[in-house]
Structure formats: C-alpha cells, structure tokens
Length: 589
Image (tube, rainbow, N blue to C red; front, side, top):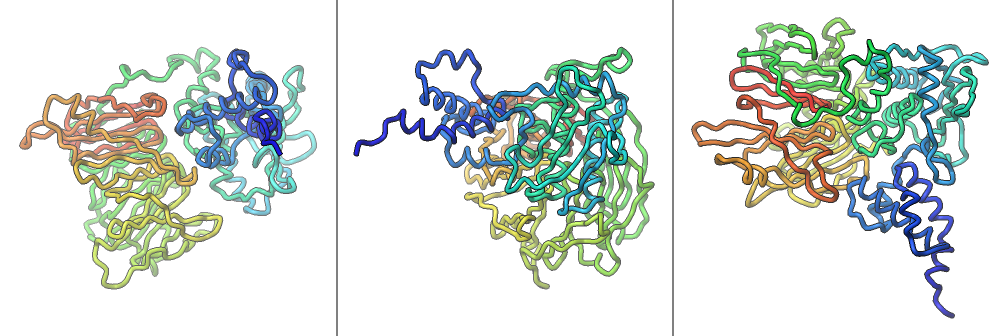
C-alpha cells in the first residue's frame, strides 16, 4: 500500500485546519489577502500554508519561537479560554464598531438586566462582578455614559444577561454575545449575552470575561498586546496602554477632549514630578488608580491621590502591638497586618470611612503574613502553623485553603515560607528547600510549580498573571525568568539588566545589588553605580514596546533626578523615594 501524498494528508486534516483558522481569526493572526495571493500552491496545500502563516503570527504575539508548527507549547497557549466576538465561524473578522455608534448616538445611559443567573455562583457575586466591570469602564471612559440595572421586563434592558447550557462547551467559547444588525438597527434592540453554564465559573474568571466583553459592547476590538483587557484570551483584570488608547475615540466633545493626547506618551515626554520634597524618609507602597501610600512601621500612614494632596489616614498609637508588620495593596483595599496579628483594611477610594478589622480576636495572634494583588480584590493570610486562607467577602469570614507547608513550634526564620498573590491566585514558596506551590481552585488542592533551576528570589507582578524568578547566578546576579501561571506555567527568559549597565554606565556598577520591580508589561531594574563610598541608585525601564521579536527586552534609562532609596509601581505609574525623603512620580502611559 502506497503511503499517502502530502495533498492527501492536507485534505484529510481539512476540518481540523478550518477549526484552528477560526480560532486564529480571534487573535487577528490570519495572513492578509495580498500575502495569500503570493502563495504558489493551491487546494489543500494552500490552506495548510495559510495555517502555517497564521500559527507563526500567533506564536509571535504569544512570545513563542516563530516556527509555524502547531506544537505542544503553542497548543497550550491556544487552548486558553478566549473570546470569539471578533470572528465568525468561517474565520473572518466581524466589525463590532456598531456598538460604539449605538451607545454614542442613542444612549447616554446604558441599561442592563439579568434574565437568568448561574447555579455556580451566588446572585450577589454575579451582580458584584458586573457592577465592578461597568464601573471600571465608566472610570476609563471619562465621559458621561452610565450603566444602570433595570428589571428584566420584556422590552427593557439594552444589555440582557443570561446563562444557558450549551451541551458540552459552546462553540463560541464561554460566552456568546448577540449584537443587533449594524445597518438600520432599532436603537431599542438589545444586546444579548449568553454565558455557557457548562463552563466552570469562578468569580475570578467571570470578572475577566465580563470586563473583556463590556469592552466589545463599547466598540473596542481585540488588542495584540498581552497586557491588555482586550487581548483575546481572558487573562487580565487591569487596563493596559492599548485599552486606554482605544478609549480616546470617545472624547468627541470639545469639553471632554480638550488637552487629551491621541497617542501614548513618548519616552521623551516621560518626566519625573516631585510630589513631596525633603520630608521624613519613610516606606512607600503603590496602589491602582493613581494612589500612593507612605508610612512608618510605628503606625503612621499618609495617602496621596494623583492630582490631589497628601492626607494622613492612620496615626501612631505608641503601642508596639499596633506597629505595622506588613502593608499590601489589592485592587480595592490597602491591607495592614499589625505586630499583634490584627488585619485591617482601608478602601483606596475612601468610601468605607476609615479602617475596618477583618479577622477575629481569637485567631489574630496566629497571623504572620498577608498577600494581595493589584488586579484582584482578594487578600490571603499565612498563619504560624503554615495554614493559608482567603478572605470571603460574601460570607464575611476566612476560608481555609489548606496547610501546604506545615510549620512546627521550633521553626527558624529560614523555614518560614513566603506567600505571593498573582492576579487571583496564591503562591507559597520557601527558599531553603526550593519549594514552589500554587493553589488550584478548581480542584481545591495545592500543586507544585516546576521551575527547573535553583532560584534566589521570586517576585510577583503587581498587575498580571506572572511570577518573576531570579535564578541562582554563580558568576553574576542571575537571569530573570517570567513564569506565566495562566498559560500552564510557560517560562520565558527575560535576561537581566546587568549587561545594559556595563555597556552604558560610565561609573562602576554593582550587578549583585540590582533589584527588580514589575507592574503589568512594565519592568524596572534599580541599580547601584559610582564609587563605593558614594554610591547612587538609578533605574532603567523595559516595556512591551521595547521588546523586539523573539529577543530579550531592551532597557531605557529613566534618569531619576536623585538617588533612589525605594521604588514601587502600580499600573502605568512608577514612584520612588530618595535619601532625603522626597518622592517622585513618572507616568509611563
């Protein structure tokens, strides 16, 4: 029996190829008509060539080797839950700009209603997710468009929300959105959102999905930037630069659009602004929404909001048990762990009127660490026994996630693990035995995160789904790896900043003293330079725009006007406090 020809294999694989092409269209990775016209093959081979070109384009966007081969690594990225709103079943893109004209021309208030709820989440959890998603887009728009819930009566609701069984996983992904026809549509025709009840829903993945779909309702198409809400895969909960840039189209009136830039800020326009001068040298922590806190460990905390002034939100009580042990920021709250184990929180927008305790008196003496992420409202705690819990707002209590690294009564400080919140996930790790574990919510168990190299430090990105790991460098500072938890633990080598220092700094540098800070697509490296007795601390930056295809990130010197004592970042903002207590801010957006 003769082996099959290439043409026969390509023809046999036709249905699978067509399915992959449909998904590639969602990422905007199909070759253009002009590129297809240049192909010198026809029939099934032509379709296979188009597939290979599309896969290569997808690999480039995903940061994978650009091979054009649908290998295991590509499949792992490809199988992430993603949006089909920008593509139809034939793989062609669909113009979603109708939603923009619909809201701008006909509605200043967009109403929505719930026809049906999911059985997997409480009504309150679902409503909270939608309310927050709508509010986040309202805040980003900066124009008078308001989302308002109405009762689900016939003919009511510009957006009607339902859950339904698809019979084993919908062909349109976890959610299907039905828009009115773009030409001559009645302004009262609703947008129907159908969520697949066969999908495993959690508050976290629902939040990412809804935030993305509301963007489409507002007329925003998919982005090719992985750090954006509108990246086709449902992975981000905080807006990126492309999301903000897409919103400029809403500034149609002179009053609203006055003074608004139409392009991202160039590197030459990025400047350091002093927001407090020659004050006490304190610690600082950044939060989403242009909020910065400075504090001392004996209990005093000040809050700063971009465009506003400093205000004191906590005072020194003179009692050692109320000294601050740790401060962390989530998407909504500043959390404070005191030396006595008390955990309190303060809402960033100040709508809660002060501080509120969230732990019971009987358990607080056991608390030793807390963790939170800028892209999630969740907060986690670690007890002296090794137990990890997450605060459940709906039930007003701590939910125990287990005891992944049990601790005994005679442990040393080196035996105490660290916890890091990454988006809506929690990681626990310990340097002494190189343990890294992640809580897998769907299975309600802890699983090992495989890195494969000895690590010297692990850092969580404040607004993304990545862990940044510094390997143990025997002859230098070690290289930096990005471990993406939402992509099956895919690992990418980012290199390190020491080579940039060596090539571009006229003074002596100290690679072993480099410290990294990560915020979304922004990477900062704080370094020491100059003579030993008069060292200064500078910072270089690397963003998504600085990354060439399939290469390491390039670094750009941000040239701080003074020597850095501590640097922090949130979203597109970066801050540092210098050795005199002055604080400077720069916006990278």
